[in-house]
Each structure stands twice: as C-alpha cells, then as structure tokens.
Image: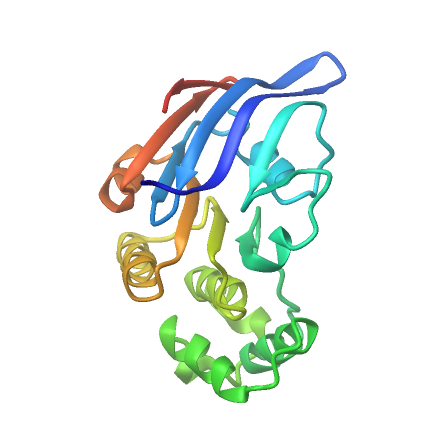
Length: 214
C-alpha cells in the first residue's frame, strides 16, 4: 500500500486579477522522485511556496506528511527545501554555512556536516566563501543545507537552472543517490522536460497554473 507524503487538492491562488494556480491536484507518494514540469511562470514556485508555508493558502488543501498547510506542527521539521535560490550567506564559507544550519536545527554532531559536504562533492571547497563558488557549486551547497537534517521529503525548485550539461548530470546523480541510499522522497521542478524525465519516477505537467498531466 502506497503512503502519501504530499497531497494537493483543488489548490487555487490568485494575485490580484492574475490566476497563478487554478484547481491544482496531485499526490507525491513515499519514495517518489516527482518531477513537476512547466515553463517559467507556470506556477511551480508559487505552489512550492504554498507547500512550505512561505505563502498563505487561499483555496484548496495541501496535506504534507499528514498535516494541513496553515496548521503545520511537525511537518516542516521533516522537510528540506531549496526554493528560487539557495539560502546561503555569501561572506561565510561552505563549512560555516553548514555549521550555522546545524545550530539552527539543533544538530550537534559535526560528522553530519562533514557527511553532507562529502555527499555533494564540496570537500575541496569547504573553506571557500560562498561568493567565490560557481553556480553549480552553490546549487550543491543548497542541496547540502537541505539534506543536513536528514529530511523525509526534499523540495527543490529549479535546482538545475543555469547548470552546464556536466553539472546537470552530477546533480541528477546526487538526487538518485539520495532517493536510493537515504530513502528520501523528492519533489523537483524544472522547465526542462528531458532532464526531469531522466531522474523522475513520476511526473506532472503544469501549464498556466493548471495541471494538464499528473
């Protein structure tokens, strides 16, 4: 029997007269790498902001790890998310950013930081300030920050945007390892169908705020 990690039911969101989301419904099951595909402006980021509580609900329901959006108690502590851009401090090093993240999450084991750095392949850059990292390295750091607390569910908004082909391939391999080795369920968005198709176990297509395939 499958277990739902995320259930979206008839979700709509409007900004003034602009209909950002229109009756969106889909489900992410435990163990999925769910690819959410849509062009820029399709509503992907808005939806992820609703899921993570960064934007208030208007219509419909979002159930995340058994809790409804607007009434989260423990669900947000069990997810990792990178939405729009990695939340890293430019003047701090890779290690310092992860150390700060560990403190925020009450993680005292420094080995967890080392493991996250090693997992995303940034060991050689751990003493480098974020402002000196390449785009691909910043994306890896964002992933390291998101996985440090060992989340059950990982939400990634356009993580391969701007990466070169080798960077995309490396990131794709990291996601597969996370899913297989740590049993992390993943929701990932992109406007590049071919890339999500290669990594996703299931996928949906959003167009002008409406799901046209799920």
